[in-house]
Image (tube, rainbow, N blue to C red; front, side, top):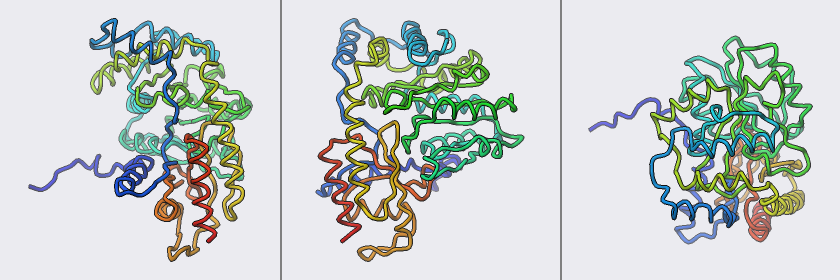
Length: 396
């Protein structure tokens, strides 16, 4: 029988981060010592007070289907969190809890984007944005930046990228993959462009907000003219070391939140009951409860920057958030190392995996073809060994 898969799935790219992680796992299973720096997954355990809340939820017999948009008391906790951390006044009807921030993003794009609508991706951008837009039959359009601008776009770049078909702009700060953090003034300049185009909406992905190193996080929806046009996406995975708990959420205009609930009701329905109860404990706690993880990430950032700066041909900036470094490795393009010719960033990432046994991710997947993403959500020992291997492979 001939396979009759849909064009939709045949044309959908595999996530570059997950593909590299799978390749690394395959090599590990064959006995090769691989250091994985490809996934954005903290190596910390979920804090005990959150785990204890989950245990209590089990003991209290939370085991039934949950409301599609989340428990009301969780949504109220999210509203308090938005007010406390972001200065945003949402009510419970404007909150939708989903199975991870990825579903929150997918819901939003599905309910806003029609075939042919343009969606502007502020590059570098998270790998799944483009694929999710394509699934909605929209047109993903990149606004490029590079290391020379600290991976930030300008207001004029945004203005010049807008077309009559532009429906949505996706902004991610702190940024994955670059770690770049836009300042309040920089975001206000972008908003001044969008004020001229009242039919364009903004999806602000803020899942790394608490992982920053000196530049205060500023929510795009805090700009008065943008509040009713912005969908604020957040979640628990990164800052709370809860990747596998799969909790994300949005704050949005109520008509968008209602539409996302309708969409989710036909896809997954309500999010896991135990994870929701644990999330209440996480969000109600002072943010200082997770500061020890951020402090450790800051030390790892310094370590990896210092080590990479010792490798000729690798250009590094200093990211102010998240737990990634996004070096420019274009000096190696066209060179042959250990019998292998490096034509692009994908070749470079594969070379590091095969020669150094270090897993990274090509920048092509993030809209920056001169770079690779290296996660420092790993121990200092692993980071030091990984960069030592990379340096040895490139300089021998």
